[in-house]
Image (cartoon, rainbow, N blue to C red; front, side):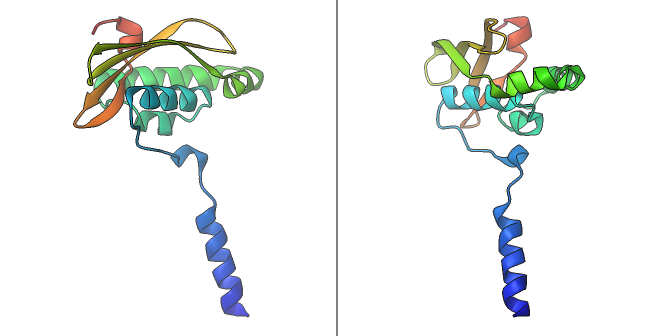
Length: 135
């Protein structure tokens, strides 16, 4: 009986996932961009960071957005969390390596763009583009 209880507890612990740890390797630029935007809207910045090109500028901007997000009301956070992503346009700037995604979210409906690049075989968001616009 003890072993059955122990096995049940262990199974339960392994079946519980932390939503902040959900990462699925993107198969395309659109997948990477969509996942990054979705996790950011939901306030899951640790997971969003996993979809991002890791450089000082990108980390700075994600930390700033995370800090700003933590200052908004719970009502606003709920609005962002429930928002859907509206993809307006997907432009392959350089075929198979650089894509610009124009989008908005249903909560604020403000146009925005992110750049997704293929880096070491993986699709990742170059988040600093959102603020600088430089390719």
